[in-house]
Image 1 (cartoon, one colour):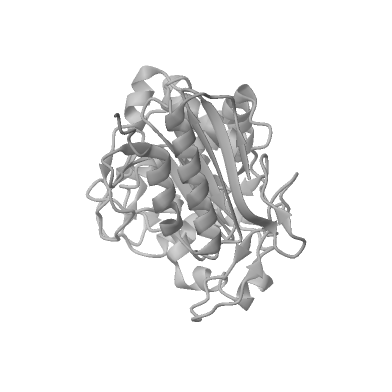
Image 2: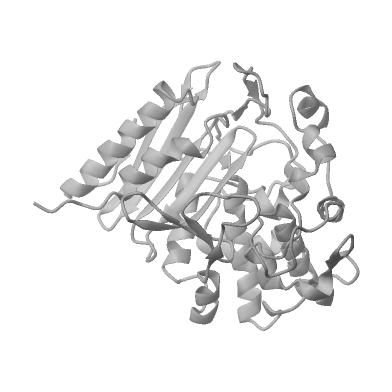
Length: 372
């Protein structure tokens, strides 16, 4: 299914055809239940889809569906922090101890040596609570069904992250960690006296008119039209069973990965962000100042990480900017050219194909135009 906007550009038509072909392959060859993509360039926007929103009913994927965006949430969280920095409410050089006294201490950690900047670019050295063995096993297989409605407080999950000793001192390397963004959001709450979700809505969602984007908190439902989210629940079986993981309490993801959004809302947010219309120039430079991601735990190849955004070098030689995310039953990519003129937002409502499903999609959307 394709929904093009008016455009006479043959290069745009070619890219749309290539993206649609990739979506079809993701479903036919990769086994994804369904996939959607929205592409924008200087000529207009195009939406394409393949497969099913609901495999039981045969409902096809369609525009305006809401889905869980995983760690693409981090770009929103970092933008809130940088807006506060622009207002002088906090500084990127502030320590965690300055705002959250006594929270990061012990087991080799010292909040006096970790800055807000290091939280946002994952150089704090603080371990990811999601990698804690006891926490992780509650999300595997049948255990997920027993725990999917559990509520986790930010403080509990920070403590879980701190239970694993650091691999390096703050600032010495890169280690992707959701714990960092829980701490960043707690600092937002301390600096403003308001709930993080309220600050997110007031500073980003409402001004941009992102009416389909929200942080669900402990609500296990996805409000509005949405695809079912299908998951293997981290099964190690050769042919794992597929489960419907749509309904779950995502307090375990919160400001690090809990947002619900749409391809259209992500287009608007990342378009404004990349174009420099959400942050003052100084904070924009801070956000897009990157560090190596080749730390003690390998991350996405060809990437560098800024403050809530990353750059990715594609095989074609093109570099894209934005963020991506995964959660049970959902993989999301939202990236664009550095000026925001060309954008791709995409989601797959199955979690077993991993990031590889987006490799061809990125190439198709951003492949340089060959001039005759």
